[in-house]
Length: 344
Ligand SMILES: Cc1ncc(COP(=O)(O)O)c(CN[C@H](C(=O)O)[C@H](C)O)c1O
Image 1 (cartoon, protein in one colour):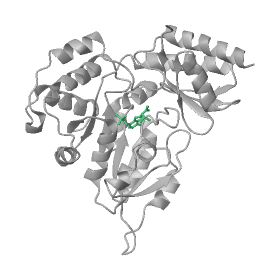
Image 2: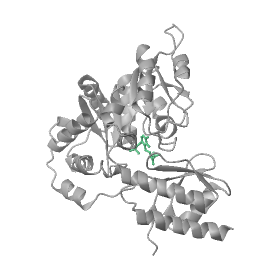
Image 3: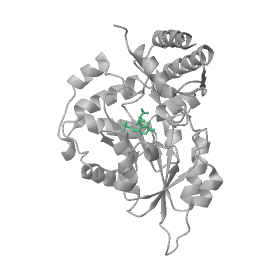
Image 4: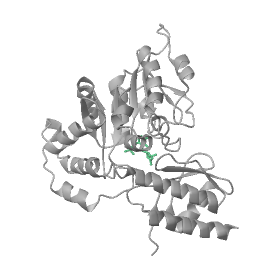
């Protein structure tokens, strides 16, 4: 049986033996009562990692973003966000259905930012007629912008425009440590201009479950209530928090390895077939298929044990991660080369 090389996402990683040992040994308690020592430690470490006062552990990045939306706004308010953002594209319309918000999307630029002049123009003046512009959401790294890492200055400029007009700023930092590694800055520097930041343990950091939403003590206290409202209050979650703690302690330094593998994958794809990869800054390789249908390519790859996902018109995505070695990248390229050869 050909071993499957799963490049669909960095969400597919499985806990390492060290992580499983930490999970098994975790001290636990009832987290709704605030009694789980491992969750409490994780929340303190996570807040410290991004330079915020407090943090709340949640089951998913989607819930982290939704709790941030609920905590920053009231129903009927307007949130300004990128048209390629995960909140707008992949969170099932929770921003409208659950948070009751008006979404004002601005075009994401290829580097994952939005145009500062467009942002200025989009913020509404307070009038009797209009919904209030209350929140700006940014994303770093930016998933649909090929894992682009937004520099602190770019985030700071947009956050400043928002803050001057009374908006709060939330950063969807699902892969913030990938951005920090790519830019040679700290995650705290990337989060500094933002009122709240979420990040995922379950992506590049390799934990099986979980994300965290960080902000001021007052913000996190209110966010904890919205987590409960959404059914995210967990009990002996220390078993999961132990894996996330292990990930924080052992898997941040290795992220540049995923970025190196992504570059190798992109270079290989560019040479062996009708593919135009967007040059990866981090672990996400978005590829334009210059011939054929994306679904056909994905099916052909899968038949050879290489998994990818469709990612916008004429594009597919491959993501490197903890469970993909350099040998796996080379093997995937060898298999794809055979597929391309057979197709011509
Ligand atoms: C920027 C960003 N913010 C939030 C989330 C949501 O995290 P989860 O809800 O999947 O834990 C994701 C997941 N992204 C997943 C992936 O990339 O495979 C899919 C698309 O949902 C994300 O990329």
